[in-house]
Image 1 (tube, helix red, strand yellow):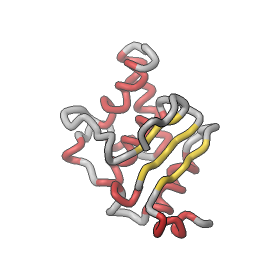
Image 2 (cartoon, helix red, strand yellow):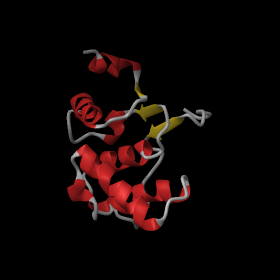
Image 3 (cartoon, helix red, strand yellow):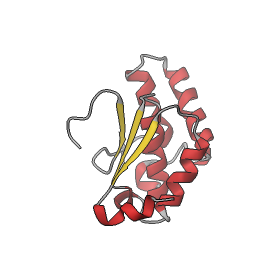
Image 4 (cartoon, one colour):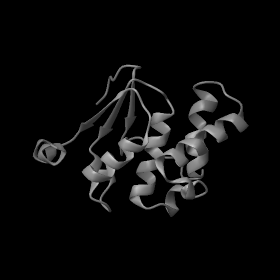
Length: 132
């Protein structure tokens, strides 16, 4: 998965959250540093992203206090806030061991208004899970 181009946002076990920051702050870092928004605007955008995904209630949770699904949603919101045309989810089963993850990802994808494509990279034996 190394060497992905700048048009790709990635959700991966290899891209951890900042454990000392809340979900909201982890997401707000992207517009703050990548797009040079103000801190209040970055926080507003991060909160809007959590609301869009149906997870506004996790805004104040820090990484150690999150379930795997909540952690995944935070990473997903962080990746989506990059506003890139491709979203790559790398081995979701390694991150989402507390929910039936193909359906969980499909529900989240249905809630977002992204124009880009979502791609799932997983072990070959899991590919059958994504056929609809």
